[in-house]
Length: 506
Image (cartoon, rainbow, N blue to C red; front, top):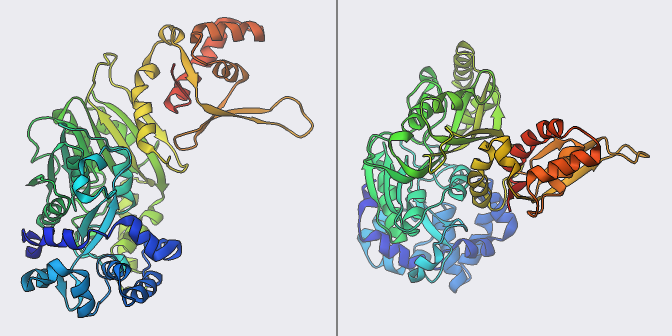
C-alpha cells in the first residue's frame, strides 16, 4: 500500500476527477446499468462506458473514469492520457495509480448525507454533493477479498452515515475507520476527528481519502477504544463484528473478523463507551449479536454494566444457516469448493455448542446522560420495514422524546402532545364497527401499533391544545368508563406511540 502514501497523487487525481460525480455517473450509465452495479454486476455498465469512452468529448473522459475506477476495466493508454492529464504528466504518479491499463484500486464518488451541513463548506469543489473514496477492488471487479482487504462504501456504511450527526467544533472518534468515510464526513462538517483501525492498510486508505476530500484526520493504529484519549461528542463505529469461530477461519479478514468469541467484541466496545463519551455525547454503532432467547438479551447485558442511555434497533434476524451462508459467500467460499461443507458444519457446531439459535443485525445509539436524572433510558425495538428517507431526522426525534417516555403517569398527564400518524380501521364486510384499530408512523420504519378505541380517541384529539390528562378524562366520560381504568389502558400505549414518533411534544 505504499503507493497510497504519496502526497502528490491525491491532488493530481482530485483535479482529474473533478467531473467524476455520483450524479454524472448515474446519468452516464442510466438506471438499468446503475442498478446492476449496485447488485455488484458490472457487464451492463461496461458495455455502456466502453461505447461512450471511444466517442470523444467530456462524456468520453467521464466514461474512462467509470471504466477505470468504478468497474475495474482495462483502458487503452491514449484514452487514459486524455482522461487523466494531471496524473499522466508524471510517470511516477501514473505508475502508482495504474498497472497495465488498470487502476490499482477503486475510487467511487460517495454521496454526502443530506442532513449534514457540508455543501457550504466545500465551495472549492464547485458544490459537489459527494466525496471520492478509494478502497480495494471487490466483487464488482471479480476480486476475492484478501485478509487485509479494505472495504468499499456499502449498504451498512451508508446506513451508519445516515444516522450520525456532526457539527463544527465537535470532537469525533471513528472506531475501525476502514477507508475513512465517516471520519471524512465528520471533518467536512467542521469536527475535530480521531480515526482508529488495527489495519495499517486501512489507515493508508483513510489518509489518502482525506487528502482527496481536502481534510485532515488524526489517524491512530490500535484496537477499539485503546487509542482514544479524553472524551468525545460523537463516537461512530462500523467495527469487524462478524461472528466467526476460530476453527473455521481459513483466513482472518481485517474488515470483518475481530478474533473474539461470539459477540464479545461488541460487548467490549459498548462496555467502554462510558469512559470516552462526553456529557451529552452519543455513539452510533452497527453490529451483530447472538440470540439464545429474547433477541435483546445480549445488547441489554452489554449495557447493564453502565449508566448510559441506549436505543437498540434490530433490523433483521438470521438463523445460523442463513448467517453462515452469507459470510461464506462474502469470503469467496462457494458450495462447489472442497472446504465449503467442512467449514459450514464446524460453524454450525460452534453455534449449537454455545446455544445460539439466531443472529441479530442492527444498530444502536448510546448516549451519555445530558440532563435526565431518572436512571438510564433503554429502548429495544425490532423493526423490519423500509428505512425512512431521512433516517437521521426520525432518530433525532425519538432521541429527543426519550424524557417523555420516562415520565410518570402524573407528569405525562400534564403534557400537551400532537399526533403525526395514520389511523387504520379494519372492518369485516357489512359491519359498521371496526374489529381492529392500528396507529402507524408517517415517518420512521412504517411501524404500527394495535390500539383500543380509547387510545385511538385520545390520540385523535392530540392537537396540542389540551393536556393529555384532560383528553383522557373526556374520553372516559364519552365512553362511560372509569377514568382510572382508562388511564391504565392509555398511558402505556402513549409511551410506545411517543417512541414510534406518532406522538410528539406540541
